[in-house]
Length: 271
Image (cartoon, rainbow, N blue to C red; front, side, top):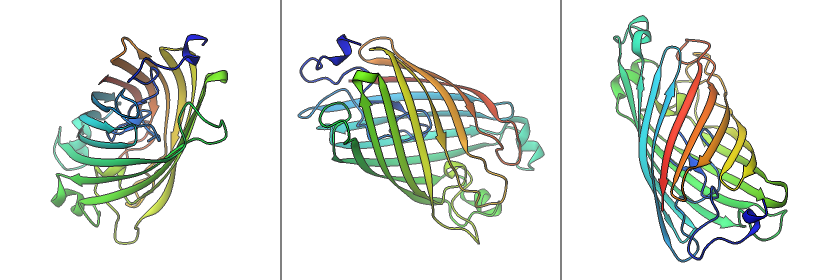
C-alpha cells in the first residue's frame, strides 16, 4: 500500500475513493450509500460517472443504469433507472409473466464535514443526502397495498478510509418508507417513514482492488416478509477510469419468494 499512501495526481482522487455505484445510482458500495462524491475530480473540479448494473436472482432479474455529477468533491447529483423483471414469478403473483417494474431515482448529496482519506483519523467524511424515487407502476403498487407511487429518502452517511490499515468503514442512516427500494411503492395504510441502517466494511488488497461486505436493513411496510440485504463484494479498477464490481448478494424474500440469492455485476466509468 506504499503507493496508495501518496496523494493523487493533481485534479484526480486516489483510485476507488470515489466509491462504486449503488443500486439507487449514488456513489458508495453496491447496496449501501456512502459519504463519497461521484467522479474522479478533487476540490476544484467537476467529475462525471456512469454505470450499468445487473443482478441475477433465482426468480427475478434487476437491471439499472444512470449517471452522476460531482462538483468540487462537495456536491453529488445523480439519476438512475431500475428495471425489475418478475419472469415466471409474475404469473404466480397474478401480474403477468415477465412483468417488469420500473423505478426512477433522483439523488443529491452534500459533504458537510471531514475527508475520506486525509485529516484526523477519528473524523470521517460526512454527507447529508436525499433520494426522490418514483415508481412507474402507480396503479399496480397501490393495488398491492402501497400508499403512494413516489417517496423521498433522507440519508446521513459517515465514511472513512484508513490507508495505514487498508480499511474502509461506512455507516449510513436512511429515513425511508420505500417498499423494496420503491419498486413496490411507498408506505402502506399502517406504515410510514422509519429509520434504517446501511453498513459497509472493505479491505484494500492493493491500490486497485478492494473486497468487503455490506448489510442493509429494510422496512416491511406491506407485510410481505421483506428482508434485510447482505452482500460480499470485490471491486477492481481496470484502468484509472473503469471499475468493475462483482458481488454475491442475499436479498432474502422478495415479494413472498424466499431464497433470493445470486450475483451482482456492475461497471462504472468515471472522470
